[in-house]
Length: 217
Image 1 (cartoon, rainbow, N blue to C red):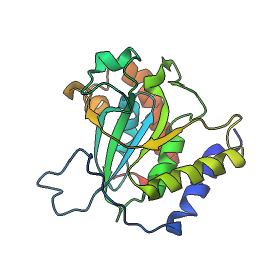
Image 2 (image 1 turned 45 degrees about the vertical axis):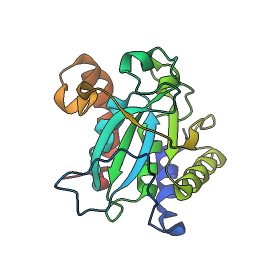
Image 3 (image 1 turned 180 degrees about the vertical axis):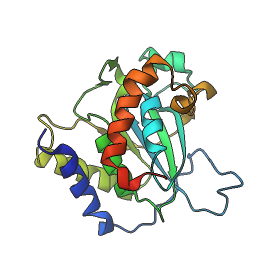
């Protein structure tokens, strides 16, 4: 890679003010509000970047991210189970719904974290996790998110940040199906499991080093 993360960060943070900060809500969004967040205006980002256990653990670290939920989007089967999605036959991707306070962290910054959290040049896989359910994808909730995602993808490819082109899918958000409860907060509750120790932990440590200024204390 040619200074990949540096290029991604420069592209994202240099254009934070290109668009208005306000983002329109989509009526299909799952509502994460509880007593502690009822007075807070939250926006939603929906990203797929491989196994949702990894992505959840990474984005939970960022200041301004109030809640992260693991689930499925982009398929044809209603209310799919994890077992069904794992077959690759439902069309869904493993995704995370990231509920964030735009007064603290912007969508631009979340995009920077997304590009840095995985390898977006791998088609339908991340490492040893192989299948369409592990595809790199951004499900945008409004035109602003769509435009920003497309601009950054184009810029990253034009800057040759990776040896090959980014293949991230950019599609409209339709519906989010929350995964079974045992998938939620997975790394925090199962950190001693082999997958957590040997796959998630190294990714998380790398993520924390790159985005150390944006981490929660």
